Image (cartoon, rainbow, N blue to C red):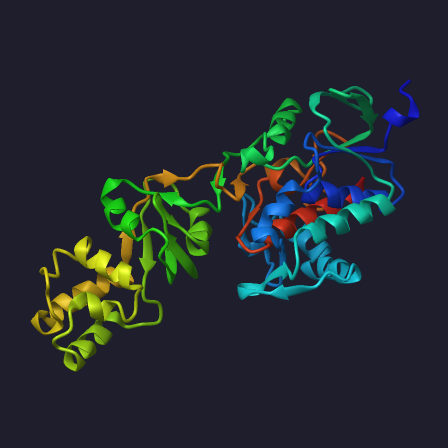
Length: 400
């Protein structure tokens, strides 16, 4: 027999967004909850999210904005615990927040307020939170036994909530995937998501000199298109539009970027030629694009179409239409991504086929639950992944 302090109704591994929320939900139902984490503070990723202001959910949450091999898997959890439900909790704690673009909700103050709220709720629900506990082994006989460097603990239910592989410096390890594999659960292919893209030397000839320049674009990959800001970097492209499309991009595939959304670039260039025949081509382009980008394009990608020192009057309408095509379909093929170090999320994870979409419990292994980023469900940028953490954690917490 284990002493009472080592025996619980449920052990949750990982005190991030999903684990905390699951612990709170189960604790509120009177369950004895042990929440373990190897870090020295809970909610580390919450603290750095949204530039320190925590983009905690999105008013536009819908299942179509999540990637998974089973596109419908997230639906049940997202409907049962909604963005409005989480906003109500934020308001109950009197945390001021605002909506930025595209339905994104941020704290007015600091993301520390969200972590403090979750810790207060966990304490009220009598969750036993233990930090600096490194898991060394997990097994199951009649109950789950979790061995740590500070002792062993048992419970009839175990929740895997340690996230994915992104941001290893924050302590990401892939532990949930390893334990899931040990219990016979399939893990789908994992790769970095919401991540900056890198390029080879040819493309960097344009990108490196204009590192730091940003503009609003539409980034496209097949049927997916995101209209947001794009940022040129020393290694390639970043910014919200690129992070969004990166989740849909595969190595070797091209991306198409519209540098002048809403503009008939050909008609505009021909009209400007009539109005300002003696202006340099890069000067005219600089009216619609950042000046450094306009100059860079003329010197690199547009060089075959624009002779050195060319003025508008010297350009044929046909040449201007070709320039317009480059601006509207700026096509580039990334060489890779910045990897898990810079990825906001992990694409892929524990195969949803193994899980109940209503409870997050595994179908074959009673009492084993998987939630949050460890599951093959990945949201768009903008609070979607936090909502998945709250919703999946709530569902498991209700079912334990």
